[in-house]
Image (cartoon, rainbow, N blue to C red):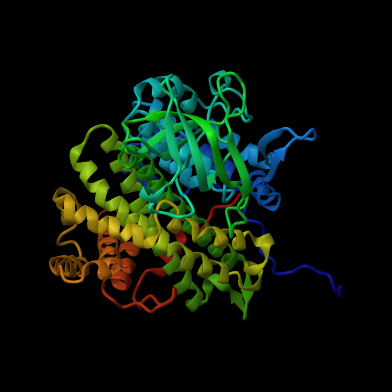
Amino acid sequence: MTTHEVVNQVPPLVGYDTADDPALLDGLAREGADWAAAGLHDLGRLAGDEPAAEHGRLANEHPPVLRTHDRYGHRVDEVEFHPSWHELMRTAVGHGLHAAPWADDRPGAHVARAAGFYVWRPDAGHGCPISMTYAAIPALRHSPELAARYEPLLTTTEYDFGLRPPLGKRGLLAGMSMTEKQGGSDVRANTTTARPQPDGSYRLVGHKWFTSAPMCDLFLTLAQAPDGLTCFLVPRVLPDGSRNPMRLMRLKDKLGNRSNASAEIEYDHAVAWRVGDEGRGVRTIIDMVNLTRLDCVIGAAAGMRQGVTTAVHHATHRRAFGGYLADQPLMRNVLADLTVESEAATVLMMRLAGATDRSARGDAGETAFKRLALAVGKYWVCKRWPGHAAEALECLGGNGYVEESGMPRLFRESPLNSIWEGSGNVAALDVLRALTREPQVLAAYETEVAAAAGADARLDAAVRRVRDELSDRTDLESRARRVVERLALVLQGALLVRHGHPAVADAFCASRLDGDHGQAYGTLPGGLDLAGIIDRATPKVG
């Protein structure tokens, strides 16, 4: 016997289609984008193959590096990325994940893009500039002249990296720069100033605390103009080829999301153009915020799917105590529970994508539903991801704690989406704000939930509890998280009862709505079809 014989090790999870996801594909058809299925599978096979996984690993192990000056002492403010980062970006842009729906009139275009963003997940990081570009366009449309100039280049599928005059490039990426050190989510406390110029432009002076993907071509930012907080478009390079004085002070040393650069920047009389009216900055940029919130939900749902498929794959091939882990009752309970949580996130994500699509086409009812459901989903799905990632990692035992498994990177990424675009309290209070100021949003939510009335007694009882919770107006702000949690669980339950696999819907209602559930994953009650649930998360390799 050799001391280095390798036995009972799990084969790499490569050579599969990440779009082979029943909850995703059912949602794609249901929300009007079945026409995108073939392209989605093409992208899914790329995402599930070895080169993509290796690019993700390399992009994270070789994070971006800030170069403030060149060798001669000239200020350059550039960020160097590993070639694998560019390969991942090239694929994402080439498949239109950054902006395709804005140039596509087909119903379901936003749904198709959401599904693509969900399946293309070999790296935790490069999705940020993809998401921001997608979200920037409706905000930019508040200034039709600027939109006419830049939107065609933002929607093209050409990835053209490098700091050059925007209108001379084959394709553009957009970012946003709102947060300041004194305010965080309280953007109305921003101190960056904007002085109008005779030619209609402005000059910005101030310090931004978080600017993600600082090598984008254009940025939407907030600054205090003479009539109040206003939205501006800031290019990295001016039309004459000179660098706009947008100084990169340092890159953040982050918990996760390490392949993506996040910078502190200073505007040193940077040239900017106004987007929307002065004093209406929050109202102008809220379209961008809402779409990046949607991507937070998509990213969290995708992370859950990646975690559970990795856990199921490991348990299917790993033997312990005389049998495969996947055949042992307690592990089956854990895997099924993780799958239920994943599919609940996916079915809600696809419903939100459908509402986004129809809202963009003028459907007032869907706009009202999205207003409440997106804030609810942003809070709940993103909150659920870190615990889900930790449990999925634990399914691999000590192997999951090792970087080579990819699970530590997934775990480090998992808290981000709950923080980005408003942390938990901000999202929960936004739900209360919508309920208080916009009565039509609760009516739209109730209409959605009522479509499942009578299908499951446990769901019906949960709906009654939510109504009781909302009818009690005392101390509502301190109860905001509980209210939002119940709104989310009822909505997920209603969607699963109507559209989900019966075994998944049964397990969700039994454990999340009926109260028969412990405080950890793997505490599903008896009598459920665990095998049918786990099969839906088993990757088909080869």
